[in-house]
Structures are given as structure tokens and as C-alpha cells.
Image 1 (cartoon, helix red, strand yellow):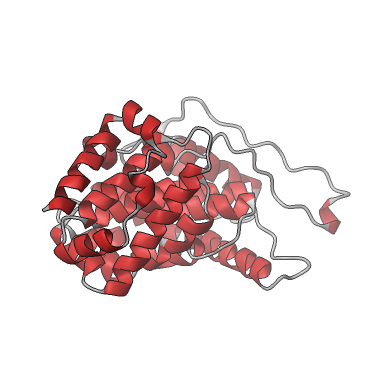
Image 2 (cartoon, helix red, strand yellow):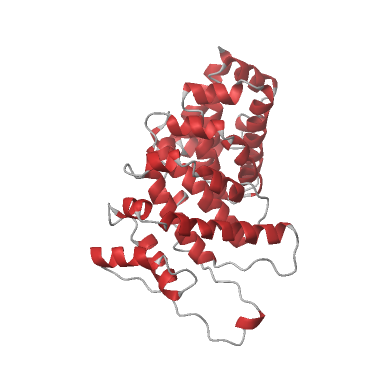
Length: 322
């Protein structure tokens, strides 16, 4: 498998610092003063980190928001933080309440309520960033999997909403799954994700998501198909193979309508096709329903600029000829 595809940049699924997000207002808040701006402590001490974890237990307060914001910002600076969050009594439970708040918010949109459940987007995203750090840390990743944590994030992936806040929640939820796969060395994560139907939960992110969301969803599919067991899972049922094939073709069509399609997303598509072509049944399916956009010159510039995609094309043609 290509090194470029395995080690995708972390910014694909964890850096939301550039998003300009604001909490939704309501009628009662229009006359009140705006909430204090959340600042970042440049060089926190260990004692401050521990205090911030305690402050998470004061939900719906400025102290809790400030703590989550700073913990998320410094999540890569303190090696012990994922373990501290996971092992502190009731901390994960309190963080999951924010995930449940996101459920209620989405349910309000889906049911077309006039006033959907209010949500503090920045608070939710900070919680997701901390869950991502627990999902891939060597001291907490196994417990994270044993607790079947992906099930809490699947509902946020499986939506067709396209509002900015909903899209960012979908991307953040995908990021948790992607971080789990980054940390997996023994195949246990792949097996669990297959058993829990992760392929189906990647359908709507690819169909309705932004470019970044599509990248992370395809990264997940690529990692699943990178193992023999995962490739067999994706190809053993004709319906499952055709779902994946149709998703890949939709991404190709999406890229064909862009002035400057990103090579990283295109390389993921070609890489997924290479992996599918290693299975005899899928290879026959690709021959029968050929993704012509890969071969008709539509992406000639990308092939010329991206050696990974060019090599994938060569490998795919060789596999199809066999």
C-alpha cells in the first residue's frame, strides 16, 4: 500500500481550529451580553491540565467550556492526557452527554422543527478532538475499542445534512474512527468496524460531505480494504461491492467537475480500486462496470502531477489484465 495513502495528514480529521463557529442564539439570549471569548493558555502546567479535567464536571458553565477548549488545544502536548480523561471518574460519561446533545440537534433538523435543539458547536467539536486523542493513544485505544465507542459516533456520520455545523460534526465523528484505525496494529479495530457495519456509515459522508469529509471516509474504506479480511468483507457480497464501486464513481464524478481537483482525494480513489482489483470477484465487477473516468483522459493532469495516482493506474490496469 502507498505510504502517502496510509499516513494521511492529521489535519484531515482533527484540526478544526480555523473554523469560525458560533453558538446558536435564541430569543432569550438576544438581549443578554454575549458569552466571554474563550482564550488559550499558551504554556499550561500539569496542575492546570488536571484542574481543567475537573472543570469538565461543571457542565453548561464558562469554566467547563474554557477547560474543554484548552484541553483540546493542548491535547498533543501532554502524553498523559488521554489516560487522565479516560480514567477520571465520570469524565467520559460527561463528554458523551455532548454527543447526545448533538443527536438532539440533528433530530431537530431532520424533523424540520422550527426551533431545533440548541447546540454549542465549539464545545462539541472540542469534545470530539479529545475523543480522537483517546481513540489513538496506546494507553487508551484498547479500552476505547472494548467499550464499543464507535457506536456513539455512527449516528452523526449517517446523516445527509449539509449545514456547516452539521458537516463539521460529521467530519469530527469520522475523525474518531480514522484515529482508531491509525492506532490499530493487530487488526482488532478493523474487525470490530466491519462487524459494526462501518462501510454503510461511510455512504452518506461520501455522498453529501465536503471534500475533506470524503477524504476521511475514503481513508476509512482504504484502511479496511488494506487487510485480507477487510478486502474479503468488502467483496464477499455483490451488493456490498457495488455500493463501494458506486461511491468511488460518485467521487470521480465529483472530482471531474472541479477546476483543481485535489490529488490526495484522487489518489485515495485509485488506491481503493487497486485494492478491489486484487480480489477476483471484484476484479470481474470492475471489468464489467469499468470506471471510465479513470482511463478516458479526464484526470490526465493529476496522473502527470501525482506519481502515487499514476502508479495506482498502472497497477490497476495490470490487475485487470490478469
